[in-house]
Amino acid sequence: MRQLTRAALVAAAAAMLPAAAAADTLKVGLLLPYSSVYASLGNEITDGFNLALATYGEGLEISTVQEDTEVKPNVGLAKTRKLILQDEVDVIVGVVSSGVLGALRDFVHRAEVPLVVANAGNSVMTGASCSPYVIRVSFSNDQVNRPMGPWLYEQGVGKVYTLAPDYAAGRQMIEAFANAYTEAGGEIVGQAFTPFQDTKDFGPYLTAAQESGADALFTFYAGGEAIAFVKQYGDFGLSDSLPLYGSGFLTSPLYVAAQGPAADGVVTSLHYVPTIDTPENTSFRATYRERFEREPSEYAVAGYDAGRLVVEALRTAGGPGEAFHSALRTTSFTGPRGPLRIDPATNNVIQNIYVYRTEVAEDGTATQVILDTIEAVQDPPAGCEM
Ligand code: BEZ
Image 1: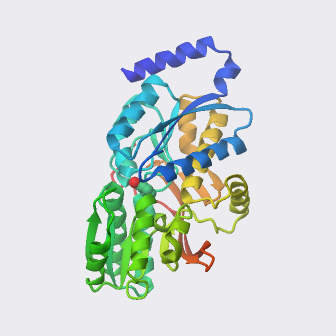
Image 2 (image 1 turned 90 degrees about the horizontal axis):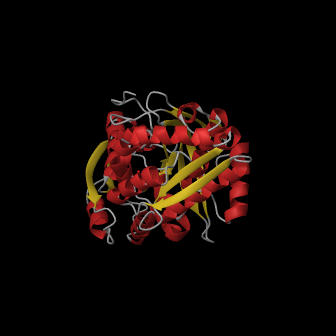
Image 3 (image 1 turned 45 degrees about the vertical axis):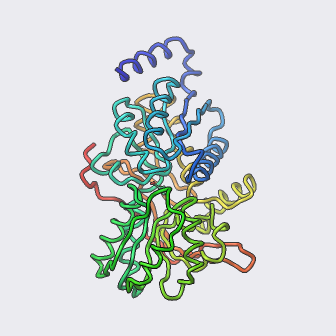
């Protein structure tokens, strides 16, 4: 089937093309949400990816085809089929939603086309359902949230209520935090999962959290849902009685301005914040701000690092194929977020996780104050056998 077709095509193409042209040419499928609740995330990843090609890709011929997953698993799978079978891309980059990643994993695995995951944190895809072809440069849902368990308990927060959207990412992020937090000694006094892409009014959930006796609220929301949730949390005036914690997507620099003062004081954890004080990040941040007139977010950096990984792997391998696939799994570098390498046991990235507080000034500008850095966070294999 697909493997045979692909092998035959590659052989025929190699025979027809002059060696130098074949070697430096790569076709990338950008598979991202360009509509719906995560559209801004998809655009930001695309901007980061294109910036990496402009920064690192001189002399290489890399073409891209963009497809919109709409944050729908069935659409994501259909677009994957199209990219692989019709467009014959050499590599796919993207995927924002954990649900979409779960839907297309088997197809890329069987087609043996590498997928560089530039957001979707679905932990199972680098755990029990791992594949040599699924290489994640962004984060896993476990990796971002697990460190917050002991960290929060050590701050003297003994009881927590949790809230997240009801889909794979929400469930996994909360489970990772809750397991680590209860192991450290904390107590989860209640939790709720809100209908994904279908909750406009968080009031009943905030009321339940308020009445639960919790010391704090721990959440995961992203994109449009994060904006609505944080604003409604602010309207409820809970910042003193029920302080807000979560994974850092909650107050991403991409949409913190839309959340306004409600985001002030929220403490979260993430693999990137714009205030990381390193030469690599200072230079990246300046370039990004000059080009796009905004702060880079974690989504921009995931796109940028995915682009750099693709470029460096292509230079190492000299062209698409098995050497390129292998180089995707073994290339490492220090980028805006810090040192980054792919774990050979799981294909998930190993990286620092930053605990940070968002501070919003009177003029509405937000900054991220890093409170702690947990270095080289690595997921256990969790059933992954390559
Ligand atoms: C996810 O579905 O994995 C996800 C979506 C947005 C932000 C972070 C994770």
